[in-house]
Amino acid sequence: MPIRTATLTHQIQKNGARLHLAMMNRVHMQGPDQPPSEHEQALLEERRLLKLARAKRQARAKLPKPKAVRPAKEARPPKAPKAPKAPKAAKEPKEAKAAKGHKPSRADKLTKKAENLEAAKKAAKKSAKT
Image: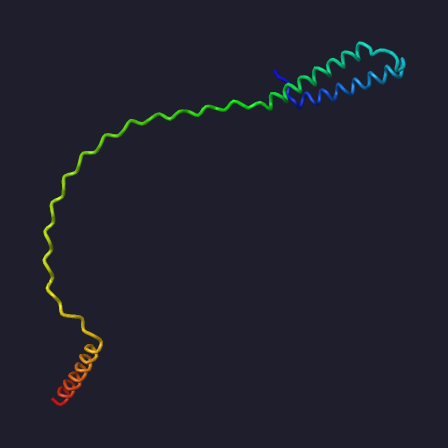
């Protein structure tokens, strides 16, 4: 199972702390002129490998990712053409409507109204007398 990049960073930090502790112990006990111990060399080698693994992972992350293939759509079979419709029978022309008179104007309407009022007055007077 591959190691995650975040885990590598954490491991490098832990390794650095252990390496620093080992170096300080050596310097404190034996002096700075002494060569590194086997434990120190093992920690250095482990640190180098961890950094190399992290660099490989980061380089691989920058590479283009493979894209998912889009599913190809199946072509539909062409539809059968519809049967042509029978032509409709020609309609008979409608009979022309009887020609109506022209539209009465406003003046004509007012005169007609006045005439009707006078006729109503005369008719009312006659009926009252009888």
